[in-house]
Length: 379
Image (tube, rainbow, N blue to C red; front, side, top):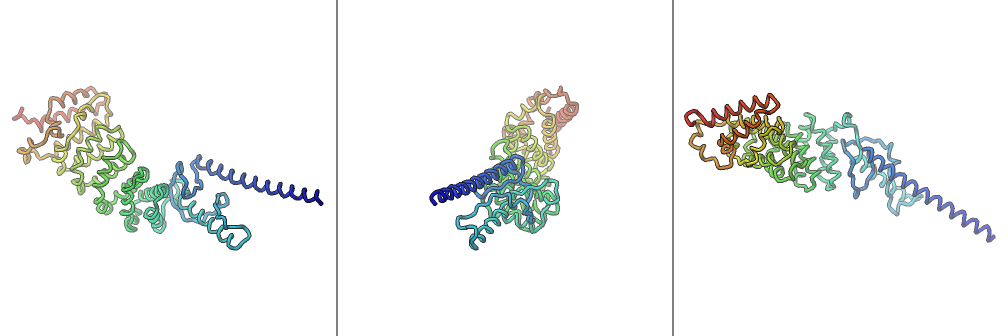
């Protein structure tokens, strides 16, 4: 009897040990699969406290695909014991929560798939997530979904009618740079619409302040410049940026090539408006601006900068402002162009530029500069 009892205990121990090893194997294997999926760019499961770094979100979907449900690691509460009615209900609720979280946050779809176009009901759910959630990875995923859908003209009206403009604009107050960038991208896509522009104008000063004070050459700064460029395609709201033109010239002078080109697009919009010519002439420009005129500078930057100068000179009403020309402060764009000999030395230095178009533009600019700012009576 003693021997049989010992054999029974040993057998039970082996069974329990095997079961525990199998559970550990399943848990380890599940985590390994999740890491492999994340490394491949696929979806992976994470809890509310987890970090979703490396996961790229493209869309939101509310379909009923449960094919991957059994592959998820679902946390069950201690009271969800197998074999009891209460435990069965608790386990069902835990599975439902995990499924909802997986669908809402971590499901990916091909960017070229028709599934990325959400219905108004789905857009409403995404906007609710943006409004209610405080978790950065959920906000980032929701804003990416909104940005993708705001690229379609018919969705811009829908998002506006659902009250999405103030919901997204509220995210601009966040300190998370990734979430803030995604919010600016959404607003940029929405701003193509005329009615949306009319409603977004109240946020232009905030976007402008955030853009010029953001870290130089950062993604947030570039996203803000793109939004301001879209908002100034027409002349209606350009006057709201009049006091920030000096800051834009500062960014242009200090930024990298990508930042410079984006600032130039914005300044080009302003320079085409005759009503902004005086504000542009009055803007303070860094002394380093003249150093950009050299043979090694990007041709596109040189050409766009010269076009801006030409437009400002053409649009300025010289006859009406003859008495006020001396009121421009030292260091202004007007003063910069007024120093003809210094400017000529810098600009003529790139006449040997290898690009023929740059040479022609330089010659045209020099002739116009001499004609407008130095008429024959003043020579």
